[in-house]
Length: 193
Image: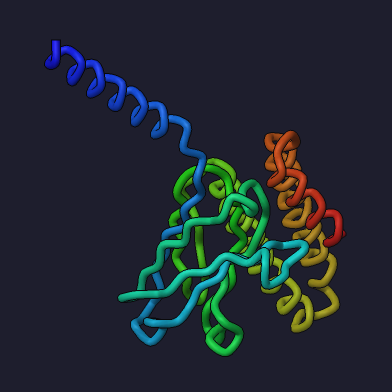
């Protein structure tokens, strides 16, 4: 009888652990940095809106890596992962949506984040925007140095590149119209027009 109670207690414990594991909705941001000069410094997740000392999460950097567990009050929000302002030279901030799961972040001169569905969408949007910015910059430079005979062709190429970019962003927004990341990208894109 004693053994059956132990087995029953063990089974209940296993079920409780499995249930807890399946319902864990935490957000973890795991990241790397390019060198050890950032060791023993802090990395921050700062809300995109309403930032204050009470709404910022942070953790220490150790051996070029960090692991930040986002507090419950900051889940399902848009924010920015960044270093202290004195350390930001050469390190690009990165947008992170704090959905459940583990986000893998690489902080560097061009930062990136992947690992959860909505952060993958943000990274896709960022990659597309950076590609467009490079193309637009090159065309503007080409236009400034062009002869009057070539400017019409360059203007048409710029229109084509811009239309392709806007179509791609529209597709990303359409596929994410019911989530916070899609709404955020739409809001930012509307400001750019």
